[in-house]
Amino acid sequence: MRKTILAYGEVLWDLLPTGPKLGGAPFNFAYRAHSLGDRGLIASRVGCDDLGRRVRERMQALGMDLTYLQTDGQKPTGTVHITLENKKPDYYIVPDVAYDTIEAAPELLALAPACDCICFGTLAQRSPLARRTLETLLERAGGQAVKLLDINLRKDCFTRETVTASLEHADILRLNDEEARFLSEFLGLGTPSLPDFCQTIMRQYALQLCLVTLGESGAFAARANGEAVYTPGYRVEVVDPCGCGDAFTAGFIHRWLRGDTLARCCELGNALGAMVAMQPGATEPIAQEAIQQFLAADRPRTVTADLASFIPT
Image 1 (cartoon, one colour):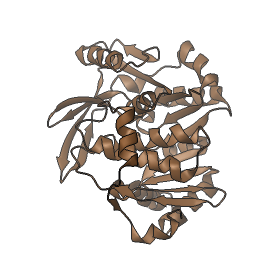
Image 2 (cartoon, one colour; image 1 turned 180 degrees about the vertical axis):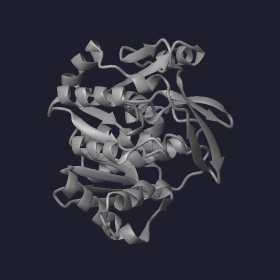
Image 3 (cartoon, rainbow, N blue to C red; image 1 turned 135 degrees about the vertical axis):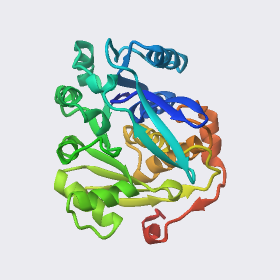
Image 4 (tube, one colour; image 1 turned 60 degrees about the vertical axis):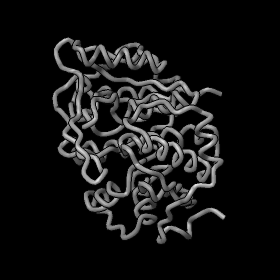
């Protein structure tokens, strides 16, 4: 059964050394969810400029619904300047842009109760208006929708208030290992290991699930009931890492909403993340058949020794 998955936040242009690519973590996630057969939607805002026009054209070409993409008459479409150092991205996120003014439009609030999942991060909460809109949206959704916090901590784009409020709104937390180490110190959790971090943050903020992506080493997932699994990553030739984490999250939630196991949810997430890393840009299409072939192949894996005991038998 098709699920309705709404991503709230930034749609923008990643200005890469190889040229501009449409991105933004919420948009990347929404597109990947859409490509898996779910109703992947994006609630965002673009400017009345050429970049905004190109966002709409690209979304149409990808077969996505533009209903919840707002237009701002004054602020420009969002952009991020990206440089790659040793294949790792460094970001300059342009401030005061259209997605900072997402409004609680009637059609957006009417959608909320029909959502199976609402995914949000911290970047689109850097303005009071967009933060209030998100809070209203989550309140309207009620308990039916899974609230998925893909935290995406970006320099100078979050505060302790937005981080803690986001955690309090969430059911599921997704972050990478660097963010986990940062949050452990930032929030004073005092957790010496990744499994300890997951259990502590779930207990403190009443989360149901914590997902930590580890780059090429895969992902660690833990539930509040004590279940935890580690799924090693796929060893691939990295072309562009932008959007890998978003693809993992889309693959994971696609299976999670259908009641699949933690391990199988992580396996699809790992596969999608690896496949995105093998191509330029975060939103290049990947065929369903290619995903199945990737999963079926006997590919080399990268294992983190400290987590090996959590690999399902």
